[in-house]
Image (cartoon, rainbow, N blue to C red; front, side):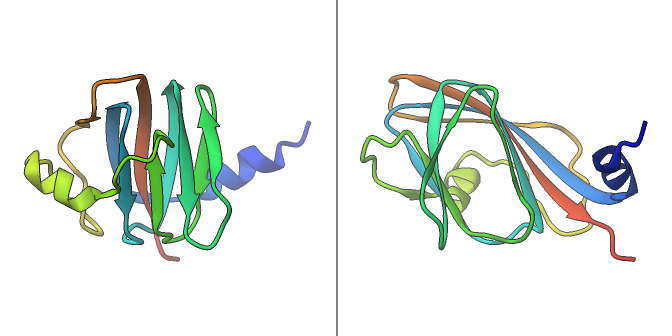
Amino acid sequence: MSDPLGEMLAAIKVSATQVTIAEFTAPWALHCGAFAPAFLFVSLEGSYVLEVDGADPITVKAGDVVLLTRPLANTTGSGTGAPVVPLDEVWARKGLPVWYPGRQPERITRLGFGGGGAVTRKITVVIELMQD
C-alpha cells in the first residue's frame, strides 16, 4: 500500500529544531515575528486564536496541529482582548535560550505566561530544513 504523505515526510531533512512546552493562562497574547523557517504547533489543552499575517484568524483547540511552512509572523492568544506582547521580550525576560539557524538547543524549553485564568497548553517546534 502506497503512503505518499509518509514518503514525503521521510524525505524531509531537519537540521535544527527548538521545542517549547508552553502553558498560557488567560488573558494572554503573544506576537512572534517571521524569524523561523517553519513552525509546528501541537495543542494539548484549552484553545487559542492564531492570527497569521495576511490571513483570517482561526481557533486552535486541544488535539489540533498547525504547520506554518515558511517564515510567517503570527499572533497567538486567548482571544480575550489581552494586550499583545512581543514574544522575544517575554523570551528575554525569562532568560530562555534563543534559537539561531544551524543551532541545536541543548534542552526542551518551558514557557509560562498569562493572567492566571483558563489554561492553554501547547508544544511549539521551530523547524529548520536542510538545503539540498
